[in-house]
Amino acid sequence: MSELLGVAVLGAGHMGADHIRRLDRVVSGARVAAVADPETGRAEDAVAGIDGVSVHAEASAALDAPGVQAVLIASPGPAHEEALLAAFARGLPVLCEKPLVPDSAGALRVVEAEARLGRRLTQVGFMRRYDAAYQRLKSLLDGGRLGRPLMLHCTHRNVSSPPGFTSAMLVNSSVSHEIDAARWLLGQELTAVTVLRPRPSSHAPQGLLDPQFVVFETDRGALVDVEIFVNSDFGYQVCCEAVCEAGSARIGDEHTMVVTAAGGAYEEVAQDYLVRFADAYDREVQVWVDATREGRVTGPGAWDGYASSAVAEAGVRAQENGGRVTVELAPRPDLYA
Image 1 (cartoon, one colour):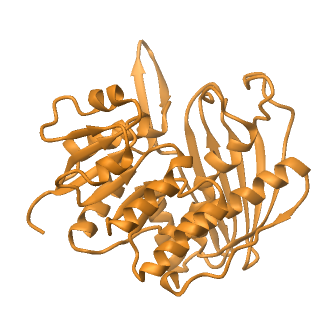
Image 2: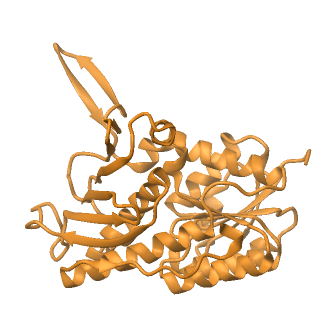
């Protein structure tokens, strides 16, 4: 493919607008051909100054717009299933922000629909797989120099939670990143989950059970623990330490800037995931564009999105009942073997 890949972006909110900027200014080989958002004024603001973009209120209209060859879904999770199935019906390759579909039943329907096509069209936006530090850790673990992985210790902290953020969303929205990262880093499925809760932080909004401590078991005997704290009040921090039979490796501490001024020094802490993972998002979208232009699909797929949703659902049940909950996955279609 010699011409620029025409991309329809569904959703022009915080994430969608950032992807529109990225496709227009950062990524090579692609252009924004159409944008859909129920708030068309927001979409028009996001594409201001970009030539040749059509703006639509309905996702289907954007998918059918002239020049659209691929789709980037950045709309709210509940809208993903309909958009994915519409893209499949048109044979359009998709980069879908997580979650693939929030509920595992809907995610499984997407998996089954793609399997019936007999070919992959979907890459799911688990951007940590494209972060340089995570990729170094993955390479180290795959190389075997540290021996068999025994545990992953994960930290995931946000400055504050947005309005309407619920206790369940600590697991099914925030910890979903650790769910995918753990499956990818270890090459193992997560089979059970337990959620523990300390006394909520005074920074947490009334009724929000924050922070939480989530423990996953894997099908090969490893343990993964996640401290999720979405109202830390000081910064956005993501760290991961792999403890193996012959050593350990930790990532995440280096993502800071040291400032020296007025006779002192201090470290700046990122305040937003778009800052901390800016390079990962850039790399993720560039890889998707390059593969799509070559007729390929790479990276985390629909099965990974389904598995993440199923594990997160088990986590929410564990959160609610205070016990250990096993994860039930459907049989994996041959397409994702």
